[in-house]
Length: 273
Ligand code: SF4
Image 1 (cartoon, rainbow, N blue to C red):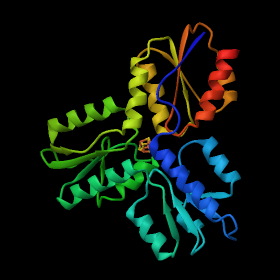
Image 2 (image 1 turned 90 degrees about the horizontal axis):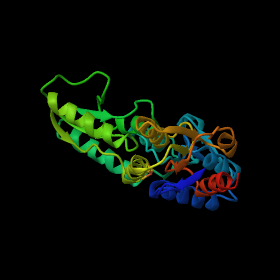
Image 3 (image 1 turned 135 degrees about the horizontal axis):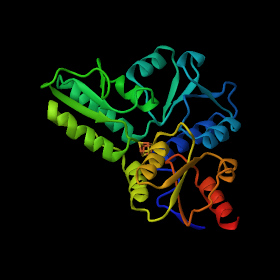
Image 4 (image 1 turned 90 degrees about the vertical axis):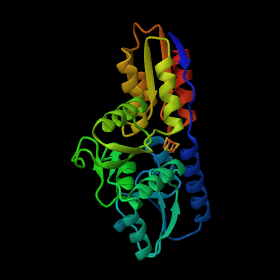
């Protein structure tokens, strides 16, 4: 089987930024009595999360689990203003690892609110990034849910890790019914990985990343939509369990939070088996 590494791979700039802040904060608190807390997974990758846990980071799903006056990291996906206000009220020291691209989308949503526009979000309402983003808007509308009355002027923003083509198509559809002001687009790191899968000439694609990683899901969907066989794997054991029979050329790609060391280990395994 011919194995092709699709470019790029390894952490995106936002994940690198979040990890740098996390490791620095852990280092700073090496001798502290209370642990360093992180609200939600820092990034959606189990290998990264378990490594940070081994280094002493404690992950929580709700700010109420963080004792007053402790230090808490906000994940790369960003948080809503309500969470920031609660952290302040409870005198928590905050290390904000929100990806700068996500922070920009929050600013765009706030700008639409300031103009008095209803805000429509293209995204998964259950995803941490979309939840934080929706918190910027008094009455957010998600595409697929309850929408503003037709004919209204609306501001449109999107989660950064959606399928770029779907976002463009959704905005085009919204324009049929609304006067649209849009800032909706996926981030560069997401788009270039999707473009590599779209351009890949081969039989099948293996996507490396954790099951809850949004950009990883999108990569597998894009490969399947092209009629390619597609698998997702979060561990080397997952890869070993895949039956690659009949595959002449396999493309290997990864989500933006998948460690390069795992990507390399999988390539080594596939090339030597
Ligand atoms: S995938 Fe994009 S939005 Fe998410 S952390 Fe990376 S650069 Fe930021």
